[in-house]
Image (cartoon, rainbow over all chains, first blue to last red):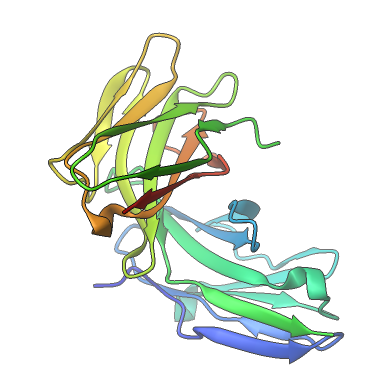
Length: 116
Length: 114
């Protein structure tokens, strides 16, 4: 079973529009971490955020914001006033603590294209 | 620069050959993780080493092996290469064995098997 589901395969928006990337996760652990990574066309994986399961406070970093809701097992990512440089593939990932799985389970990614 | 160094950046080789990918973790990090990113399988965890010892195994083929050396750099060995092994191979490092304090990824090695 998929531990992390990113149902949106591709999204296109016009520059300056807001866009939300969805992430739904599945875990039996009570302690876990959620991550978002950005993969620009150059290919590297850029860390954006890490959130632990006990901290449901939403976070804002510039144009980026994250909404974590344990009740719906979702960790959505919103980009406000999108820019062409935001064009990339975005991955949501889960790391479980208590099961001893020390690795990241990645979603399949959402390709965001920002049209100028 | 993330602090995690992967070499080479690109590698083109023929089927049946063997290659070695190298990763130097960020200074102070004891854990090294290897991931494979292919078009059909997405980003998949292969294997983790912590301070020289194998800690966790994922979907790593028997033709693949890895090790972590005393200076903490790691090598991923891929043998009897097949066309389907063409992928981007990432190395990540973390300070602890649990990896929950964050992972830092290298820029990847793009392997093309022809």
